Length: 168
Image (cartoon, rainbow, N blue to C red; front, side, top):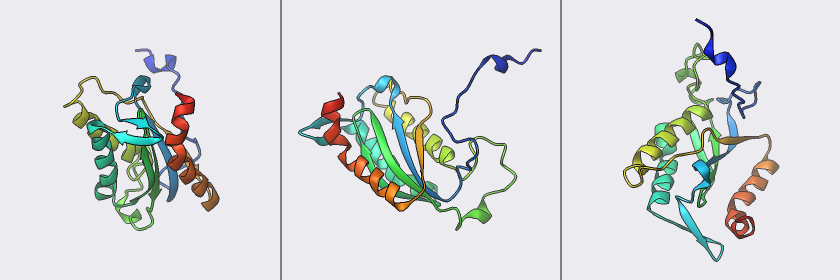
């Protein structure tokens, strides 16, 4: 049988030569499908999250409970997306991560495994309220290389509600 996958061009946003289980800071953005405003409203540059936004907030804060190699940084829920900083500290947990799983996707101990689990449980919970809820496929990430970059991204996250009016 002919390989049917050859007709599909899957362009990953991930860096091809980067191991996403490497310790360090990652800036993550996850959007709702079609940018539907499920999570919050912004009034006077202040975010007012709703019940669905609270679900997202609660599960984000639980990430380190389920993934002890993750530390949380700055985080914000916007009407149709979230921004968050995650720190992978796999040096403490490297002995728990098998080295023979390189061909498994997403790799255990990676940002992808964390985000896939987060999106899955959030979707399951939100669909009890709104059966139409969907995330945009994938997510956006930035590998943060230094402290200055992290501080700039933290500022961006904090100021995101102020920019909402100008962009929407």
